[in-house]
Every structure is written in C-alpha cells, then in structure tokens.
Length: 481
Image (cartoon, rainbow, N blue to C red; front, side):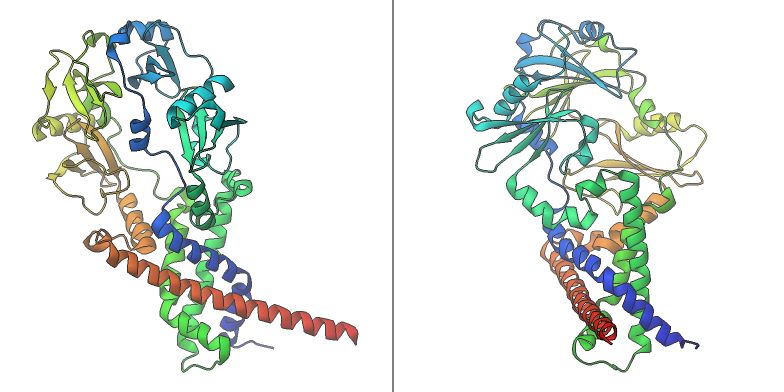
C-alpha cells in the first residue's frame, strides 16, 4: 500500500518527535538559563589576578636569565612571568609545559602535594585550614574540569565558607586553576551541562560526545524541517486539543527552532569545516621581533604597591616589562631605560611587521577601530580597544586584529570562520551588534523565543507520552485476546 506524501511527513514527524521532544525540551529550557549563566563555572582572569598576593621585588635575588639556567630550559621560553607562588617570588617559564623557579633561592618547584595544596587554598580564600577539606588528587577530568584538563593532575579542596567553594590546584603550577561555588554549580546543572550535554560520563569520552551532539542535532534538524513543512500542508488547522496547540506553537516558533538546532549543529564544526586555512602564522613572531631574550632584563622597575605579576616580553625587537596589578589595564615599561610607555605603537610600524610576517600576501585594507565590529566583539573578557584590523588578500581572506598598545595579535579570522560566526552566533543567540548590547531588548526577545520553544517541546512531550500509553494499552488488549 502506497503511503501519500503528506501522510509520510506526519508519520515521520510523529515518531521522530516522541524521543526528540525530550531533547528539545532540555535544550530550550536550559537555553533560558544560559542567557543569564553563560558557560561552566570557572576562575576568571580578573578574579585570579585579584586573589594573587602582592609581588615583592625586594625579595627577588635571581635575574630572569639566571633563573632560566636553573630551570634547565631547552631554548627560549614562549612566555616568562614573575609572580608570587606559595608566598615566595617565582619565575614561571612556559611553552608547551611550564617550569617554576623560585626567585629568592633558585630552587625549582617540585610537584605540589596535599599539604601545599591546603596552604594554597587557604591563602587564596583567606580561610583557616580548619575550614578546608582535602578531597583528593584528580588525574582525570571531573564534571567541572573538562575545559581545564591540560592543568591535570590537580588537588581538589573543599571550603566550608558561605559559598561552599571548591578549588582545584595544579600540581605543576601551584596555582588555583578552577574555582566553583555552590550557586555556580547549581546553575550549571540548569544551564550549560544540559545545554551542551556536558554530563561527565559522556563528556569524558570526547569523540563519542561530539558524535552524539552531531547526530542528535542533525536528526533534530530533520524533525524541525518536517514540522515547518507540516505547518503549511496541514493548513487550515485540522487538529484539536493538544495537537492544535502543538500546531499553533509550531507555526509561531517552528522556524526559530529549525535555525536554532541548525546553528547548534554547525557549532560542532562537522568535518571541521572552519578550522583550517588562512595565512600569516608568522605574524605574531614578526610583531615580537624575534625570540625572547631574558638577558635584556637586568634592572627592575620601581616597586608598585598593587603589583601582582610581571610578564617579560619582546615587542618590535625591544624588551619590555608588562606589569599587572589591580588596574585592569597593564603597564608597559621599557627594559632599556625603565620608562613607562603610555602611547600606542604606530600603525605604520605595526603594518610593516605584519607584512614581514606574511610577505607573499598583499594587505588589502587596514583600519584602527575604536569600537567592536561584528567579529571582534565584547565578551566577558572585554578584548582591548582600540584595535588595528588588517585584511589580507589571500584565498581564505584572513583578517588579523592587533592590539596597538602591546603590539600583539588578539584575534584572527578566515572567511569560513567569519561565516561560522554568523550562522552560529547570529542564528543561535541573535548576536548582532546593532542590538546585542542593548541589554533588556536582546534579553527579552531571547527569553521569549526560548520560552516559545520550550512550550512547543513540552506539548510535543505530552503528545508523545500520551501516544506511547495508547500504543501500550493496544498491545496489552491485543495480548489478552
């Protein structure tokens, strides 16, 4: 017996909808929470810097070059930092891994044990040891450390404070790498965890998790497409009761559901379509002007009362200290004469070095932006402004965004990455500059759309459960005969 096309649409939508309505309900419900909670709980850069103890330069006895010799480091490090570790000044040299050398006596930091972890946690939170509980060594990611798995192994310490804080301390760096509070953890269970399917047993198997998200969102696209098609083929409305309300909410929010699940599917980069391409891999090194030479740092700048850490950097061939304290804006000091540099590096010098880093590709456009554009835009970390945007004429149309204060690359996008920005952030969260930062307007519309999607999915769940009960009753009646 041949099934009419419209009947085929109805049956496919019906039986796909029974299991997938639960997933859509989870995604839309958690989407409402995501509007306010964002991602997983973590330790922000600002809070980390705030909790770092003051750096006392008078306690430093070794120069950066002398400390590097103590570290037996192979070659020039990608980054060198002076900060306070376990109450002592210390240099941290890092490329792929990191080595920490104490700047007062020159001993190398060994692995941090339970006793040291408890002391670090107490100093970070400002609470006595009696209010801390050691919860063990973590060698594999748990629910809260998937995004910081590179910092493993870590010690987990629980605090008996008002926020019920959990800290994760790296054995390699002796720093707090992850911090969660009871409120943040609870909110994550309503927001990021169900929305991203970040359930520990699944997320711990990265390739499996990725395929599950791709397949469920891919089949969800088929379900949403069929629903939109039925909104036309079933007009005028032929339903009553729950089915009628499912039709009405589908007409109102079906297209949004389709674009939302489609953009969610593409966020996982099927076939890694937006991860490759582009030119200019040597641009960051050209802006630095060569590898880091720590012998250039033979004098110390004046002690600041709010000084927390110092980065040793090379900018356009010259050595500079980058001091960070309570002020969110770092202070740049020339190592040659200890002068504070407040002016920006010239656009001409930046463009010259950018071209040196990509010599065979023409620069087709450059501009200094005083505000964010559609690709380089404000997030929780507030990327620096002004910024120099440089567009190359390579086949992938690569764009660079360069901080003229520190002469550093802060963002890079190819054509496919910019396209992904529109079909993911644009369709998934309506992230358009003209109103994304209007506060209440964007929030209100996003909540309304997600509430509509939640109602559509909830009605689908009710219909699916009722149908399953009817099928089960029919089977029982058939078996009794």
